[in-house]
Image (cartoon, rainbow, N blue to C red; front, side):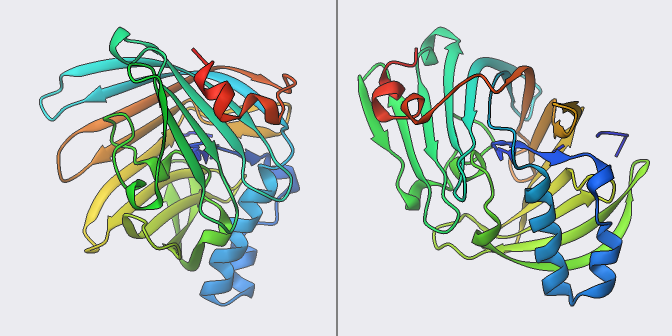
Amino acid sequence: MTDRSHSMQPGCLLLAAVLVLSAWFAAPSTAIADSHAPEEAGLQIALEARERGTGFGDFTARQTMVLRNRHGQESRRDVRIKILEVDDDGDRSMFVFDQPRDVKGTAFLVHAHRTEPDDQWLYLPALKRVKRISSSNRSGSFMGSEFAYEDMTAQAVEKFTYMYLRDEACGELTCSVTERTPVEKGSGYSRQVVWHDHDAFRIWKVEYYDRKDEHLKTLEITDYQQYLDQYWFAGTMTMMNHLTGKSTVLNWSDYEFQTGLDDGDFTQTSLRRAR
């Protein structure tokens, strides 16, 4: 890994995007690992990363989604994104596709939750209707990309069990490597292996293993920048599918924070009107 300084997350996925604070608040992850059993250490690292990403309020951003097939051929999509932080629950997220013409006006709404299954809806302008994404379909591809619907939401700490594995170099940084196992039925993954740096608990890499425990995909997160003097957000997220040879790159730009978004911007009515 090269020097890359954030985690959504998309998670963040945000997809949220991947959020974390700067190092000066840090309780070093090495101290966590040294003073806890592996299961507790893994949980504490995840909680610390979430704590450092809390308090930004809301933001808007733009995203270029590049879909690349195994032969290197590319197609591009332009997306607008808005995120609202919700106290003691998951975030509200909306993705609106502006280009190309065949997907223009398509919009995706997520009400994430910490303990309950997330609510997700997709607006399809050609049909002029909102489709609810059921729990059983969240392992499916999001808009033809290598990201699944379940990757397009913040990864709530409560929805996994954890295990600290080791520390190792990640570029010029040192990372703690942990394993998290989904507790929700319907996930397409048996487990995920996550790299958090020691400086600011940013996520740099996630390996995804399918239900047969085959290494299905790898997400690499780079080009972090700090906003509001404390929050780190990624500039680039690259998801590689090892089974198909396809990849998807998300390039983030034009972050604007504390824009005054509220719950009314994240309803099914606003989803239909988002174009």
